[in-house]
Amino acid sequence: MPLERTSAVAGLMRAGRETSRLSTVFRSAIAEQLGLTVSDLECLDFLADAGSATAGQIAARTNLTTGAVTSMLRRLQQAGWVTADRDPADRRRVIVTLRPERSEELERPYERFAARAERLVEGYSDEEVTLLVRHYDRMRAMYLAELDDLRPPTTYHR
Image 1 (cartoon, rainbow, N blue to C red):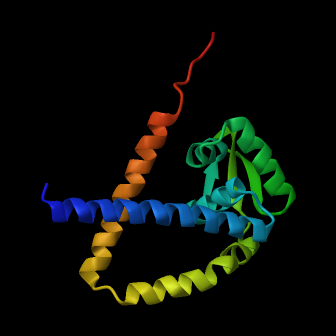
Image 2: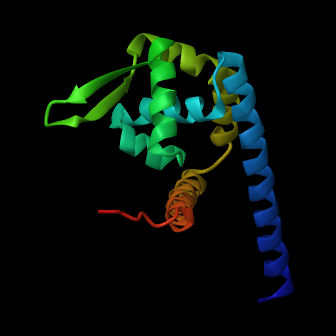
């Protein structure tokens, strides 16, 4: 690989790591401001995007055990953030939904950041935005694959 490209790729990787670190710190500060844990915030953000999900889907997306998710959902339900209803198709499953009246409260801490991000993106061409979307889609797929590889294999005892 040519030296110029090697240097550019190294710079991209360094910038990605720094952005990831800052994102973690930022999300931690948001969670604290809302009186939540980072895992609580990840769960609520996932529900805001997904609409609703099963406890198992939340466990997979937050990389928490089902026991930890059960405790988290109980806490979030008691705090009025979510509803948890039995799945009519399978009474063993619980469908969790972010309470619509709490959505604005969840979005409020991000408003200034979202406005700054919007101004940043205004400076990009349509092609650049398309490239960034493709990059983030591919990164998401990589993260999901890595999480699958990091999870211990499930063993069943009869």
